[in-house]
Length: 191
Image (cartoon, rainbow, N blue to C red; front, side):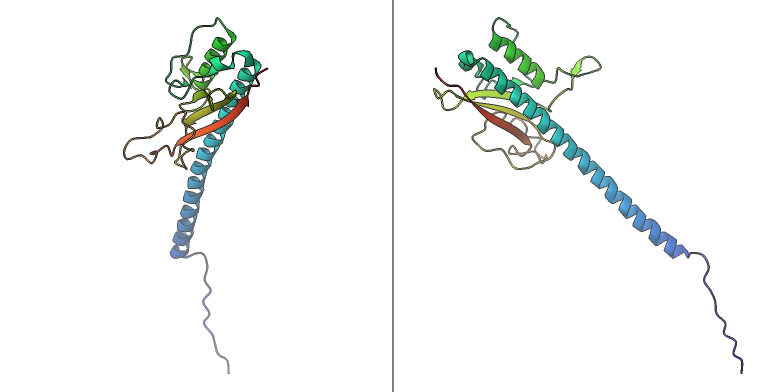
């Protein structure tokens, strides 16, 4: 007894299998594109933090190098140097030169776009020097700048640039959530 079985073998791909594959690839590619954009934001945040640390150490070294005139470096938080400020033009003392150079560095004067626009540093970089507490010989140096995404606000005791980096009413950057700061303390001994 011979039975003939009619076996059909499938050849090629069906249209449904191709469509499912395309959908899976599209979702994967969208995920990679989203990851790439987040990586770019993280890279820019890291770059700005590195620039802020360089500028912070620059002023700390300038103040420590001219410790006899340390009090003349105090800007307070109401008169920071940097973005949106007019840099001092007097170059009659070492402190005046240091303030001018630090202000220009905070504004990004090291690199220019089309020969005119400063682009070589932080977004909205500002620098403050405070004596804290007054008469102690301790100087709090702060560099503040505009972050790209909201995080936690800096501590209340760090007032440099406070409320300067909030966005519009519908922005995520409210209540200093996009303000970034780095600080250091320089101690000047009274000899």
